[in-house]
Length: 295
Image (cartoon, rainbow, N blue to C red; front, side):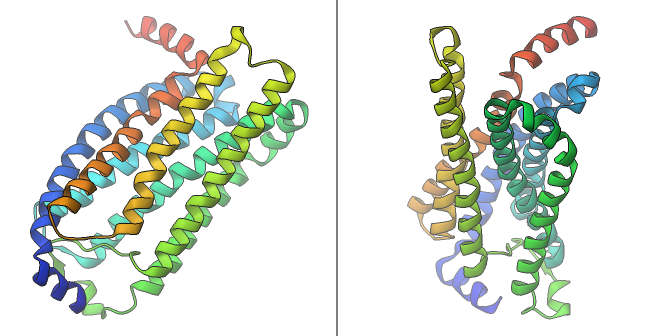
């Protein structure tokens, strides 16, 4: 903590952090509003249909959308505490940031599970149906257990240096935790692992579709969907890698670069519910009927 405070005074990074937090909190508000609006619509459609509620792809989709909305909502809270200099206890800052990090990892985990489920449904349609139905809740439980245990272990590794009194003291700028070398290395490894699962799944789906003749003129939308998902993945991954690599630096250039990367990342998060949710044909048709019923 002393080292961080000395470095902050030396380069006056506290002013940059507060300005950055103000801009990020505003962006999070927009992303949260849009993402939550679409999430509520999708969950309302799925919850009102027994068939959709039992399908693993819609269960994963709802989990994914809830993670996106929760991530943006917790981002408003954390960046708002920084922007307003709320003088929150250090422990509260760590808990809010840790919760946001966990649901952020949940976003990537659910994307990987959705990609694997799509591959199994296309390439192993008969075997996958019974297999996935029997283990779907165990997979979700295992996913969240893995995320929570990983972050708790890293929290215990990095959060043991401050004393109990220091943890309960107020911190105006709410410093983050899980920012050390072990956490960064594990974060990059996890990111590449999940990204590899997604890319391999999409590659196998594409090859299977090409082999079976599915990707022809009558079904060009499937190829376009794969392309859109890959672009969306890039908008998630590239800013995250640069964030992890750069850390916090002073100066107008790094401030502007950070906000540009964050804007790209927030844009991707904002449109996740639209791309993975309402582009689904079945959800589109049910949305039309649902809106007619509401009117």
